[in-house]
Amino acid sequence: MFPIEAPTTLDKGLIAIAEKVRNGIRITEEDGLLLFEKGELGFLGSLANEIATRLHGNKVYFNRNFHIEPTNVCVFTCNFCSYSRQYKHRDDGWEMSMEQMLDIVRRYDGQPVTEVHIVGGVHPKMNLEFFCELLSKIKAHRPDLHLKGFTAVELEYMFRKAKLSVREGMTKLKEAGLQSLPGGGAEIFHPDVRNVICADKVDGTGWLEIHQTAHELGMHSNATMLYGHIEKYEHRIDHMSRLRVLQDVTGGFNCFIPLKFRNKDNDMAHIAEVSIIEDLRLYAIARIFMDNFRNLKAYWPMLGRQTAQLTLSFGVNDLDGTIDDTTKIYSMAGSEEQTPSLSTEQLCDLIEAVGKTPVERDTLYNELKVYTPATA
Ligand code: V47
Ligand code: SF4
Image (cartoon, rainbow, N blue to C red; front, side):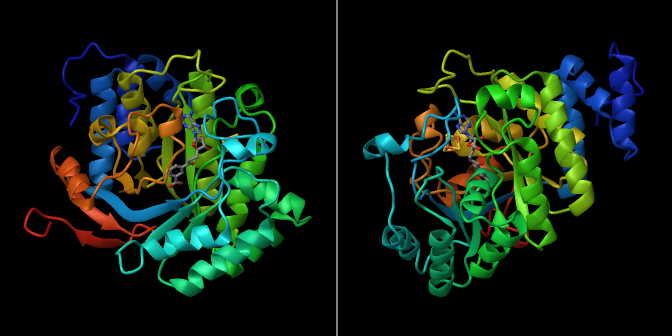
């Protein structure tokens, strides 16, 4: 525990924040900004770790999932994206047929995966009807698989093309078997940044409306933030604050996932990636600021497994999953994880090496198995 009573050279504002956190008082946006400006690594880590330990003890969650990326053809032109191809250049990309995607699902027959994560580019010809059919076929084949799919960006386009309201479109997907939304497409909500890095896709208000509607229909979702490019600390706080406000209203977010900007082969390649110190500071501040998000996830295929392992001492309590090698969005953007695949044993070793206990969870964070050295 950080010794707030001991003589210290710490900024008085930081001491006041530590006291608030200890007394369960929510910190303000100004406090959050002060943490970014003045909070040094050890202070932030100790406070964030204290919160994570209070919530989860020593436990670190992961799930067994696999990804389907239907296409990388996309009508949008986000400057940070290394992965998408325009429709006119679709021969350089991929477009999966229904059968190809069902083949991926069949590949996991008999394997103990609990979730499929379906996210891709926004293809002008893959519409709501196509995805409803995909979802219902997956459900028919494997009813126990939790279907998590489609960013708010994909959904906004699908519903607009189908001339349906968000509620109508979401209801159709839910009836077809969709259970949760992943957190992608959030980037940075503030228009000063969004209009520069991804001007043509759904705006921050639209993203939040889609997640709110999903929550109102009884579905859960995740939230992300793409950090470490042109955004300022104020924009990060604004982003996290908007999520915190919605979470107060609906309680429907399962977790928050900061995503580190990677700079290979995209229109923002001239921007240097932030340091690991900045990564760790950000994770810790997210844990301290987002007091109504129980789970903070480090997505290791993007961060790299060693940095992800370090985040476990900075408030993170979830390492996502054991992911197969079909996930291309990060390897194409420069992540050192070129073939992001970790066996359950490797993931457990990684967690145990920092003195934590691996726990397998399902999408909704129900505990499925606690791994002790004897059970692994
Ligand atoms: O929205 C794209 C990001 C996201 C880059 O909900 C980039 O469980 C860094 O949202 N550098 C899609 N990031 C992936 C996503 C996700 C991933 C894992 C788990 C979950 C979940 C959601 O990927 C995009 C964007 O923010 N992204 N390009 C890049 N160059
Ligand atoms: Fe399309 Fe998503 Fe890439 Fe943006 S980040 S261009 S929406 S695939």
